[in-house]
Picture 1: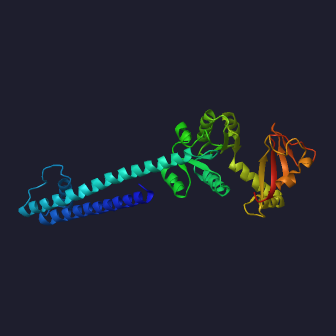
Picture 2: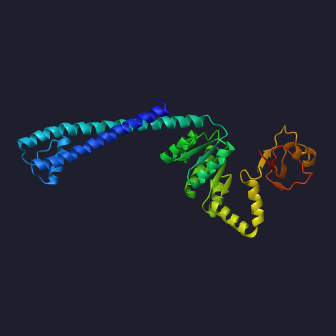
Picture 3: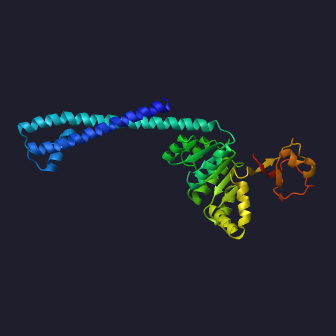
Length: 331
């Protein structure tokens, strides 16, 4: 069944359910008013008689009925049973349709995630996870979101994203998201404890996976690193540092924002990793003419041993595995 036909079926079942509930309420109101008028019973007694009549529970009549009351009861039974049957059948069909529809979406998401390679797994779609996804989209980066809330997963899918509904710290959910084919994982769950457990699980499944963790507390940094995190980001620490820089070095911050913000001067900072067959390897920075070859200015070089050379000198040697941090127009 296609998504459109499934939606139409659900809408039809929902309409039937609403009609059935409306009919059932109408029968109860009419029955209560009828017994009160025909037999002169109190409202509560009339309502009780109406309920046990249309539900067919078989209780004894609350009081002796007149001939008119018996005729009214017969009509009420037929109307009530029909309404109850309509509500019951519609509710069951709607639940079955919902389950089938949800199962179909889940299978589709698992299939899409299974076809990805080199993607990014974003665990948690709170404020941080949402910001990460919004930044990944313009970069055309492939991603999979793991989120517990099924409604949030549905909204992600409606916007064209790929989402797996489940617990991100569960190995089955990580398998469904393609952890063994992913390039990185972002741990953006609600608490440091959840993120720590997720980091331990993900690192155990993929020791070489790049894991970026959001930390609420600065004191948790060392725990995350020992658990297998590649980098730990503290939004509050970064925000506080940015505020201080705005206070003390506003012109520097303005320039950095001008360069890094999307669309500003069409400038961006990027990285280029040198492979074994790169024509730049085995040469100095001046000999390689990297500025002309890449069309970008080299700001720094991260060496294979982890050392970073800022504002590299012209005689800096370029080796396989080095990462050039560059700035230039466009990508």
